[in-house]
Length: 572
Image (cartoon, rainbow, N blue to C red; front, side, top):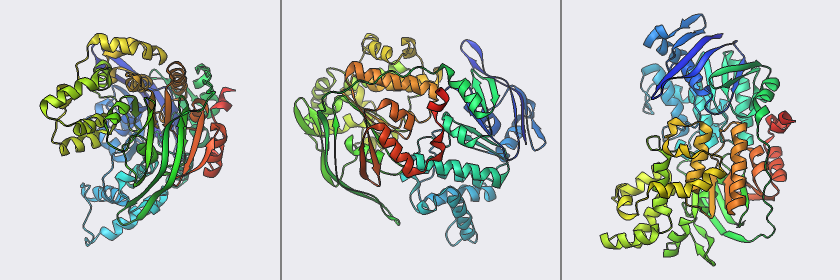
């Protein structure tokens, strides 16, 4: 039994004390699942971190199995909470490389020795640890991926592996923060059924933070609604969720596209992706498709179906064995997979937003926009080519440098080291940007995204989660790209904020004619935002058509029973 009484949390800020949680109290029985919902920034994750013992609190009591922890309990109280709880944090992909099952072996070994190393295969306890680890892999439906390298699992598979690591700690309190974020309907169903099963098997209090109403409706016994750090309501899921979304914005219409004119052509892609010791994983064979100008096109499918891999090839950031990807650039088709002087000009009009996106925490939004404008502003390439010639950098190396901001931070660092270059090369090659430049570019974009211009001079820590996402979209749009590519960036937004972002994307598409290609696992979002949906399964396109029809087929394929109740039902 968990009992939480009068929890208060305050942070120091430049304007004084800021209360982020105020007098929060509730109880969760053994074998009960309590859901927590609320807008981004309402205090949900802070509350979970306090219960986990990784965040201090200023007032109140946490009682678990008869032992009380208060602010006066100090480090001992924090360590106790850490020893009896486990947490899965949103967007946490912190896994060890190597075979997936070894992530659990490491956790089990740490429980015995305090050291998250992998014992040698001939160690006396190795077989026992491996056997126990495989039981946890089976519990989350990943036994068939045991030998796959953890860093090459899909986003949904990583989520399940992280959950298995938490379960290996044998917690007395399980805390799940967006446990099915960025997973396909089938994986969501598996995860939710695992959690439901754990409810009976473990008979411990389970708290689930999720922005998805359908998750709470399927999973939870009760739901608590937080707003601005206060407990607004706790009770039956349907009643509380209706209260939560009552202020959701109306959908705006999507621009009708009268004439379909291809702007991207994917021709005969073939690529076999295999992993050491496990053989073939994905095999693209002779895949072709067109993306039409001005349309919003969604790629959907199960976790691990090949959507992100296909998107990376479309972006020119992963090269297939065979095939070509052409973009219509200044009236001619340019192959993004092959080096040419035109490829840099083409990349200038493409903007990419990755699955594990984030704004730099230590820079203001303005500073990050200035860097993007520095690279992709009106005269940036002409200026960079002149400077590169002066300091002896070839156009081919400049082409590689120009692609780096579209890569993940890890990929970027590797390539910079390979080229023996440091980040200051950008300030040497590309023109400086003034405050007025940023203001001029940002004004219309911020208006379309319903963002106040004051956010320009704030860091990510000073804005809400919803503002963070829209600020990142603004960053992607600051150079007014003709093509915007989004890889599941909105999976962990609450429905109220997601509706605002959805409407913003439709405004951008309407006002600027931006072609948008996106990957999403969120069926309501795809139905609302897209002109067209493409269903990918096992590296093949199996359906291409209206979003409603394609999403319905994916749901049937996935046996996604949790989607029997959705946002439309609550809005009606």
